[in-house]
Image (cartoon, rainbow, N blue to C red; front, side):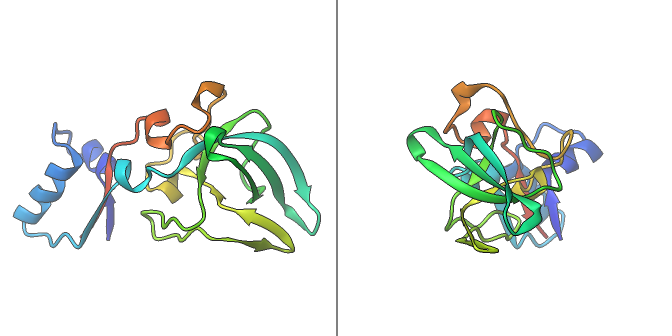
Amino acid sequence: MRIQTEWLRELAPNDLNARQMAELLTRLGFEVEEAAFLDDVLAEVRMGLVTDKQPHPDAPDMFVCQLDLGEHGQRQIVCASAHPIEIGWLVPVAPPGLDLPTGIPIREGRFRGVESAGMICMDRELGVLPRGSGLQYSTDVSLKGVPVCDAFNIGDALIEV
């Protein structure tokens, strides 16, 4: 079972950081199999500026987005239309080769014939409690290329017991 430490704080408010919570769970008799400290695991997830968004030519439920990650380059990413995404938004972008703490591997590939290099990440995919609509975004262009943990102050953990 994966537990988000932020969720534990809502149930039992405390001043422990995520590492201390993992240690406490172990002392209480829970076997902590893995602890993914989000500020470490998500260090490569950067804020990308959506510069273009077009309907996917062969998938009415998808978009092809162009993203600018500042010094980390440009990316084309195919994303689902289940969640609104707008030109001018800065959104969390996971690069190919990264495994998210929720177990999702990020790969470069084709979605119905269109190249996609990475993933625009929802809160649940990053391992954080959903806030608002479930997609963290900003319109502050100074955040372009910044790690998502710095942009949104993500510092908790997913603990598997």
